[in-house]
Image 1: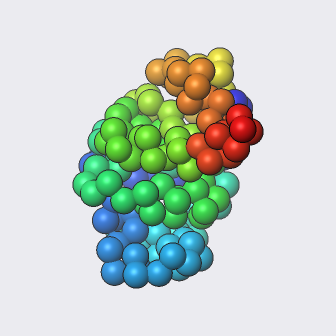
Image 2: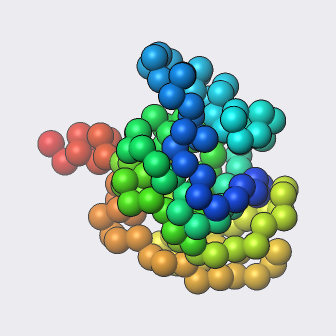
Length: 156
């Protein structure tokens, strides 16, 4: 599964409340979640998400197990998230909603082009290819299907 996007840099230990604050979870309107994504971390971040690959520090998606965080990121147009580690529930929620995750430790320069191929197991930044922890074939199939619901529907 290949992809590319411009880098948006965030730090380590980004929790799900920083991704989408609980005060916005009274609605199921994804447009509201997209508008307010990362608002408490950086109010300008939501406007930079379309076509982005988020480059983060360790433990991205920690905190609560809210699926809305992964949905808000995917709906904002993020192509993938790269981090050395992800909170396990966030990891599974992201795959289930069709949001690619790349487990690797990258330095980040805002706006750099990031290319990746999850099937081949690499990510490229600043002209250098880096190996990434591979996703299982089933997770790759779920991503290729656009998420778990589509994956299961195709198997009926």
